[in-house]
Structures are given as structure tokens and as C-alpha cells.
Length: 174
Image (cartoon, rainbow, N blue to C red; front, side):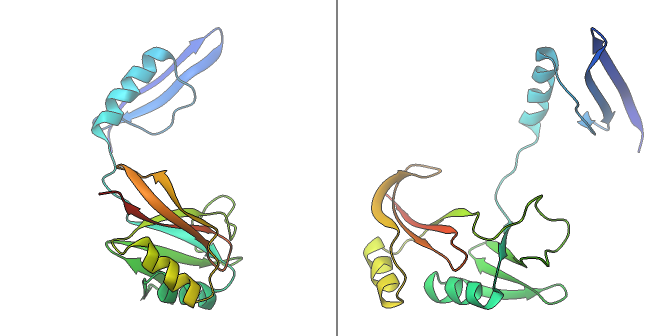
């Protein structure tokens, strides 16, 4: 891989920025940046954008309890992949499951059960969700309440999963 440039600038004996430009200006490491350097980085950021969330990871105490909650209460499907790994599938996304203390590497710096706050969008009315949660003995944490989603106003109901992650089920206002 050809190195286009290797630059280190100093300001009063303190390195301001160190980077390696590879190909079309991809940076290997940024130490600290000046305002001039930030405009260059912002220009690069305009070229590099994510388009969607593919998967995320939940660290859990019990795979069985987590799978039962998300399949029975939330309507996801369990999928197996790799060497005995499990995930929860919904739409075009999935939630990979890591058992606490046996996380697949690489993983989050401090993977702990109960640290997630997730919002799922549903087409089914919240009254149906509330009824389902009551039938399953899952307490409503809060709601229905008005919130702001990624693309507009939503109405939400909150529950907790077996690891005490906050789970928000929402409908966009029509």
C-alpha cells in the first residue's frame, strides 16, 4: 500500500497532528487537530458516510432468557451463525448476543449486561403492544409517551428486557 504522505506539525514543541495519507487521503491516526486540519477532516467526512445499521451486540447474562424475551415479546427470530453463535434478527438488522464473561473478540471496552437503551419501530399500534406485554407479565416502564425519533415524532412504550436494558417500542405519528 503506497504511502502518499507522512506529516507531523508542531506548535510550540507540541505535535498538533500526525497522519499517514493512504490512497485518497485516508488517515491512519490523528493525534490532535488544529482548526485548519478540522476543515480537511470535515471534507473527508462528507465523502465517508454510513448508510444503515447492520448489527449491534448485546452482552447478556443468559442467552436463553434473552432469546425467549426477544422472540416471544418483541417478535424477533433467532439465527445461528459462526461456531455456535446466536443473534436476534428483525428486518434487515440483527442483534448479536455475547454471553457476559465469554464475549467474542473484538468487543466493547467494557461490555456489561443492562447498559443498552434501544428503540424499535413497529407498525402495530401501541395498544396492541401494551396488551401483549400485560399478557406476558412484562411491566410497562413508561408510556405511552411522545418522543422524537430519527425522522420525526413518535409515540413510545418502554419495557425492560431480562438484563434490564431499556426497550422502547414506538410508532411514528401519521
